[in-house]
Amino acid sequence: MSLRKAGLFVLIGLLAVAVSACSASSTTANSPTATNQPTQSQVVQKAIPQQVATVPVYQQTIPQQTTSSSSTSASQLVSAVVTQVVDGDTMHVRIGNREDTIRLLCVDTPETKDPNTPVEPYGPEASAFAKQQLEGKQVKLEYDGPQRDKYGRLLVHLWVGDKLFNQMLLEKGLARIAYLYDPPYNHYSAYVAAQNKAKAAKLGIWSIPGYVTAEGYNLGAVQSASKKSTSSTSKTSSSKASSTSSSSKSTSSSKTSSSSSSKSSSASASTSHPEWAKALADLQQTGDVDCPDFSTHAAAQSFFEAHDPSADPYGLDRDKDGIACETLP
Image (tube, rainbow, N blue to C red):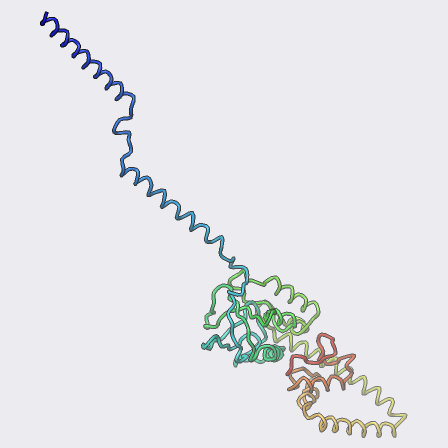
């Protein structure tokens, strides 16, 4: 009987072991293997690329917040004081404690300072206008492309208050659009509109046919225009002289009186207006008078008013506003 009990206990024990083994196998089959479980190092490695990947996205938003280079803002303008005007398109300025030279972008005024080139018409007027508008004044410099030319001058659009001086020169017919080395330029469309308006009105440099060319200013056109003007004046004077001579045959006493009066008037003009001396000398030599013949606006204005201002035979009032040589000091 004891042997049977012992055998029964052994059998029960074996069955228990077998059941336990089957249960463990089933649990192992239904659970992930050790190789499918992420380790701590793998979790860290996956987390790091995710953090780094967000950096370029943040950086890419920066250009969207910056101001476009084609627009002009107060932060892009440099304050300066004009200390001296060299000519119509070149000035000396003081920027902070530094002295520098600026050259206006996109415009070219007639030459007045080149020792190898004669003074070109409307160059003195451009210089006088620049002195009147700029010397001693606070201005703003706007850079547009390369900051300096081959001579070391700063290349700028020049703001005087809320006006562009480059454009003001073009509006007055004192400059042409030129030297477009690095387009597109800010304000170019405004410059073209200003030049076209002055050209249509035949202001300044545009009043002389053929004077303005793509390469610069043609002095040959000036000489040709001067010859035509002299010839026309000579013919007019000859006609007047003939008429006067014919009239004098019948009125010799009136002629003598008129001659005396004319001489007296000429002497009086030279004495009363010594500032006309250069203009009168030029008139005798060439038959014409120009604004550079006067040192001041007042002198030019008085001459203009004394010589049939409604007809303006010498072209001293280019824009027909009743004011002669308005660019003179």
